[in-house]
Amino acid sequence: MLVSPCCLHSQIRSSLSNSLLVVASRFGMSAYRTLLRKKSMNLNATLIAQFVVFFILAGFTMKFVWPPLTKALDERAQKIADGLAAAERGKAEMAAAEKRVQAQLASANDAGQKRISDAEKRAQGIIDEAKNTASAEAARILAAAKAEADQQVTQAREALRDQVATLAVKGAE
Image 1: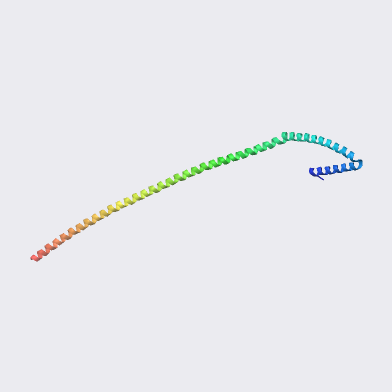
Image 2: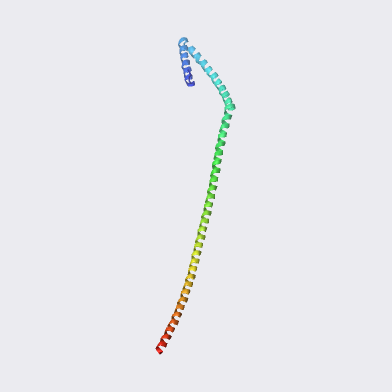
């Protein structure tokens, strides 16, 4: 059965107290006092032994346990620092990419506005050309109609003269 060190310590202390009580009851109080003095001497030896064990454990820990721990902690700190640096680089790259995107959007917007402006100018040119063509065609048609009307008027006058001359000849007869 395994016993935790704390429980073991309590059991030793209680058995020691019981032993002291048994000694005091069998041999009297003087034996009890002698045993207590030996216990205090034992306490000093125990304390010194504990110091020695502590320093041995501390030396062992400093030589064999602490370096791998510090190495692992340093590696972890380096990984964290690298991760933070990568995050900063990523943030900077993202900001630069955002600027490039904004610049491309602005240039695309400008190009689109230029194309719209050019298309409007071409449309206006086509409209003006169509108006000019229509005006010229209308003027030509109007001139042709006027010429035809003048010709018809001339023909009508000649026809009228011929009729007047025929009537005058008939009236003179």
